Amino acid sequence: EDKVVQSPLSLVVHEGDTVTLNCSYEVTNFRSLLWYKQEKKAPTFLFMLTSSGIEKKSGRLSSILDKKELFSILNITATQTGDSAIYLCAVSMDSSYKLIFGSGTRLLVRP
Amino acid sequence: NAGVTQTPKFQVLKTGQSMTLQCAQDMNHNSMYWYRQDPGMGLRLIYYSASEGTTDKGEVPNGYNVSRLNKREFSLRLESAAPSQTSVYFCASSIKGGYNEQFFGPGTRLTVL
Image (cartoon, rainbow over all chains, first blue to last red; front, side, top):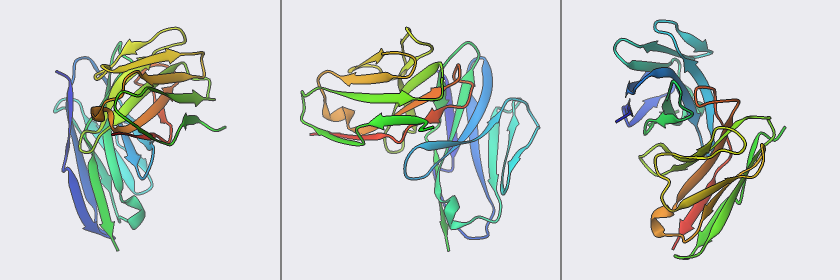
């Protein structure tokens, strides 16, 4: 069965801390891994990763994929209260229109 | 551009009632999706439409039907609502295929009493 597992389930940090969120997967015919941020409403896209070892970066957020060990990490440096959200990881497969989502990591950044 | 829009935003139903959730996108995307999100379970795919004129089941299709009315619109129908269908429902669209970025609507919070 295809599955995506995220850890930790929740995390509380203080502003300025650095956090690492984990996503591991077991799917057939992997194509890409996507990260989304969900605040109060709809998930918004952060990154899509298809190749191992190539870091994607956007401001204080960065992500990398390891296709050999079947996982990805999302790093957030110098966290701010606005980073408080649920971070979702999803995986797509060749010849499929589906995304398989993990259950998410709930991040709370305290002032 | 409005992106992906959904109506209604909130709905309360009694067990056995029916309703249709509406979704529209103005990005000329080919593929559209319906998900439900329950606490601690992430997003689960109910149905999807790879392109206009086609629909397929996702992980949790039981109790739902869909219609791809045209390229822009994709509706989700609950024929006889059950309390287990209490959830937040998201519609999404992508250019083509799940491996492209999916854009999500604002969601519909549905409560079935």
